[in-house]
Amino acid sequence: MKIIFMGTPEFSATVLTALLNSDYEIAAVITNPDAPVGRKQILTSSPVKVLAEKNKIPIIKLEEIQEDADLAIVAAYGKIIPKHILDIPRYGTINVHPSLLPKYRGASPIQNAILNGDKKTGVTIMKLDEEMDHGPILAASELPIANSDTYESLSQKLAVVGAELLIKTISGYASGKIKPVEQNHAEATYTKIIKKEDGKINWSKNAIEIERMVRAFYPWPAAWTIWNGKILKILEAEIHNGKLEIKKLQLEGRKILSIKEFLNGHKDFSVDRLK
Image (cartoon, rainbow, N blue to C red):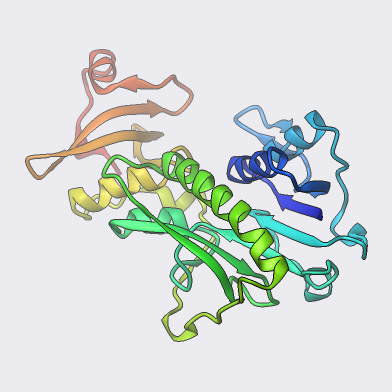
C-alpha cells in the first residue's frame, strides 16, 4: 500500500515513526515549511521533515499528490485540506485526531481536555471530509488523563495510542471490514487555535483553574503573568490545601528556576504585584 503522510509536530513524528516500523510503504511526506523558533527566531525544520529526511522519504507539496497513492494519512498537519485533494488517494484520506470525537473538534483538543478537568480523553481515527473533524469514524481508543499531565506529556501519550490504533485500523479499513460510522454531529464541541494571549493568567480565577492552565499551556505558550513590567511564566504548580503552590517559573530573558531559587534572587517578589 502506497501511503502519503501529512503532519508537522512531534505528535505527527511519533505516528510517522510507527508507520515506518510497519509493513506499509511511505511514498512521500507533506509538512509545513521551516519556521522561525525561539527568541532568536532560528529557522527550524518540523520534526516530520527531519524524520523524512533521515529516512530518505520524498517531501512534496499538497498539490503534488499523485493519483497512484492508495491512502493519505493526516496527523496534526495544521492546515485545512481541500476536498479534491482528500479524494485523490484510492481509499481517500484518514486522520489521527487526539480526542474522542465528536468532542473537541479543531486545533486544541488536548489543551481543552486539561483545561476542563476531564478524567479521560482518547484518539479517533476518522475519514476526512471537507468540514473540520466532521467525517465518519473508523476507530477510537480511550486514555485516562493523569492529574499531573501537561499538554506535552498527554500529547506524547496520545501520539503513541494513536499510532498503535492507526496501524490496527488501516488494513481493516482498506479491506472493507471496518465500516465508517457517522458522528453524532449534535454532540460536537469545538476548540480554537491557541494564541500567546490565551496563557495570560486572570488572577480572579480559582486555584484549580489556574493550575489547569499551567499544565494545559506547557510548554507553549505557558501560563504567564506580568511582574515588574516583565513576563513571568509559571511552568509548574500544584494545589496544596486548596491553594496554588508555584513550583517552577521563568522571568522574561532568564533561565528556569525553582520557586526557592527565584525567591532567593528576588527578595521583593510579592503575588500582590502580579498583573
